Length: 261
Image 1 (cartoon, helix red, strand yellow):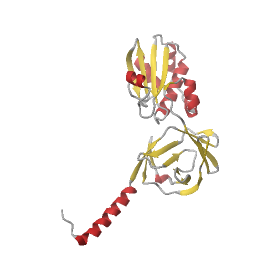
Image 2: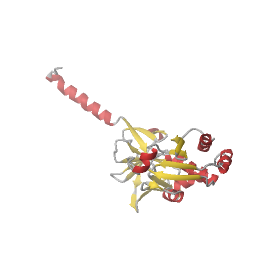
Image 3: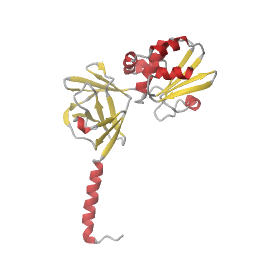
Image 4: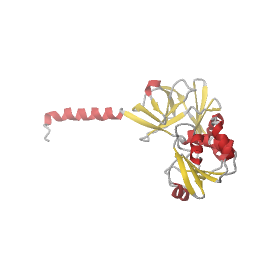
């Protein structure tokens, strides 16, 4: 189609306005569960740290222990207070209109792999944890991710299912695939740890296998058990009975019992 010269400046102006508007359009953020958050020296399991899916150098921190969401500018090393209406949280995802503008509340400092700042009279510390890859025993997992320990201790399994698992008599291999950078895993894995800890049954041989970012390692285990995570896989005599993938509705111990019945 031909564009007449006198109209070209108008089309150009409309194009630029549209591009600018698109830059301030809806922006998707995803939770990064590699971050551990402490507020006033206490582990905060209500905290979520989100990063833009287009990898811009910003983070958003939400927490029930803070008065409002916070925007962290990684380039300027500054922290900004946002209005609750600036963010829309849906589980492990968040949406904003572009990069929201907030009120500067200070800078953050980096020390020993952790960034810290003060807001609302509280010290906030955020630590990026290394990814666990391959076999990891419960003690290592809980030492690596202290928030898992808090969640595990807070979880109360159904006692009827625990009684069943305590008395279960068939040798069963349990393979738990997880990723320390996975936001769903931080909800599911502590429950699984608690269930098998409370069951205390030597008939269950439980392996916890961490997956690297990108899903390429550990290669042999991924080839054998697949790429589901979080996943609780139950096997007897080398044969898979069934698996529980993701965060199932209802108590996970009930799902395990249903598979073993």
